[in-house]
Length: 135
Figure (cartoon, helix red, strand yellow):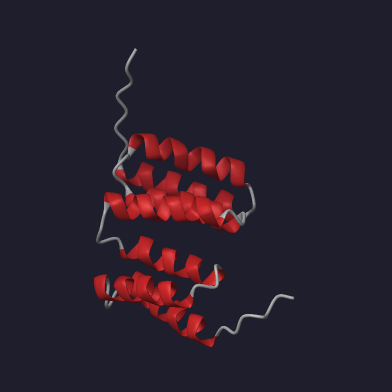
């Protein structure tokens, strides 16, 4: 039996917000379940993929986060949202050059929007970060 489910824009926004609320409250399994379901319904959504990446990021799974962010870029090569989060990830991976490259791409793609703004703030943060030497 094949299912045909068409969600309204409001329903999609509600589910996305539910996933983010679950993520931000530390309920990662529920967040992943909601966003994975949304991904099945919206396979070409870079936003859902970035959302899944942020769950991995918050759990410390940087490789999983990178995979989701790169999939988002594959789906939408102009996703400032994905580039900004990929830049953030590279800051945490202690790779400032790669972070700056991704963040500058996000700024170029969304110069006056919220993702460009987010990327600018991360670029400043990344420039200010001093990594502690490990012994």
